[in-house]
Length: 451
Image 1 (tube, rainbow, N blue to C red):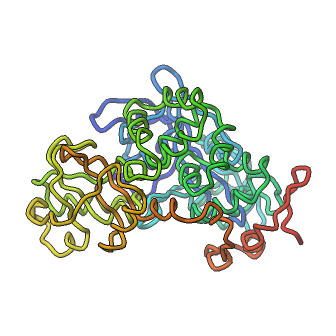
Image 2: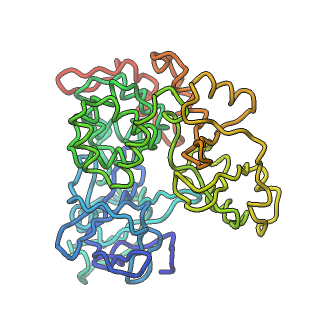
């Protein structure tokens, strides 16, 4: 397998070493974690179970894997060493899927699963299982030789893996709503019962739950966070945008807030404390502390590489901020902004320091919400720098944060036409669940769609 290979068989990484970018070994792969989906759709690969030298097994998300090579896995070096705990919607590939007896759709013949092929989706950072290596005839061990013909078939050519269509628990809901945008999934959770809301939230991965929490009303955020284990609550807060996480922490009792801050990484906790020091409806209270910051000697190519990050929202990727060192907020002297349209017009070798827009005024951290909104309207901006009296960049405010604080508290009660956003490949039953989400009931743990 070449570096960054878009496809590999799971048997090839069983027990292989994982390394950080510096080349230091951090552990070995012991399993892969996937999420099964309804309708026969291929499972999504969520991450790897990695065993550390201390024998502790942790979860390594696939978005922290930078390359899969023959005999090794390269990571970003950012690891959460909390002990791995399998969630209700997750399946372990080595522990639960290999050696399994499934059925060939075309012939109805039972076969044994020997291996699975995983590939990366084009232009996305997600991975899913697409092929199954099976043996006909007698049951055989996962990697042992045995009699009988072997063949590789598409995932859709076998049955016996996927969740049951009639399942009525949190697993079924998660599978149905998996492809919804965070704002739409937040609308779904908002209208579920507290019990079912907690079940679905507990089964989401940290990054997905963080995205959804950012779109929920404060009462729902506090309720969901309060039902998570403290270590996981701290992980989810770290995965949220700093400004949203700070707003949520501000809603918690002082004792709970301090306990969660103590569980977070020191750098993230420091950002939270800095943001919470500002009034909520000011530029300082609205800003994120993680804008794209580059030094003036960086090139246009460097800037374009940064804004291509798929984890950035369009507003955050709209422009870069050029500053003297240090590069982390609060930075050295703020020099100006370069908009992404300008980056597209200049040669890749151009220094960003030569094309900055230094005429645009910046926001003071104590600027009130009406002043911030007027700034965005006057200059047709989607993001704006927040600079202190010393000239240091503190962060950036995005237009979505301004809208969130200017809209009425009940704006999320607006009916969304989710039937226009039903994902391709979703069957009629799934589509009905999405369209009728506001009619979902939860009686004695049974979910119905009102039919």
